[in-house]
Image 1 (spheres, rainbow, N blue to C red):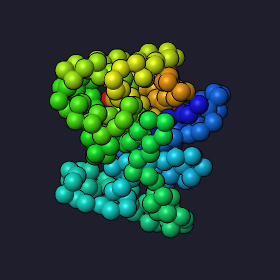
Image 2: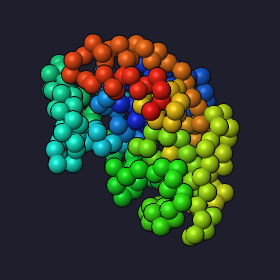
Image 3: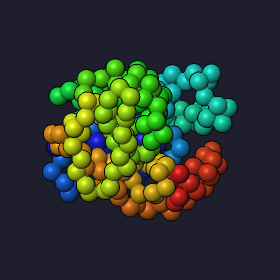
Image 4: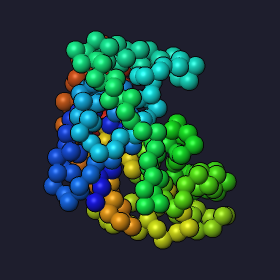
Length: 248
């Protein structure tokens, strides 16, 4: 059984709560789909912890730590990325931290399951519930994987079944319920976010993947501690902390 986590975004309190919950399960591996950094106050520590995980993918924010391309980001995001990069460069273990991020994979495939941060074609592409009404988009994405895609980036839990070329079905998963991800022609699973959920649920999200079945979990954590750290840091926009309590 694998524990799938993603979109941690420097939220150490959420990450530690999720890792504690995972230790109580039968999971034997941790697979992280990327975006360990930015938004939150503890990007460097989250990257340090990732060094013990089995598979880690490179998210779009992670890649900005290695190679910041300002034309791909808004001015506000550019300022934030510059600050987070300075955090990494000023760390005593800067070389090791950068080396850890460089070791992250672009994607991972096993047992006909394709793991990606965004989509196999673009780690900055989202899959949202409303895309279930856009079969052309989802068919294009589906053409890039064999049977099942497990991805992050959207910060929203979801299961998308391809019933035909003209019809995709969206399921909003219930925590603790097991879902067979091989029932349809193809399936997309969006894992949700550890550190920045945006589905109106403030709890951190992770998925247990066991053979054909995915089980979603939500974990409460000390949101105020994370928000207080952000408020105390003049280099991080308070909005990144205040939104946590609202799950958006």
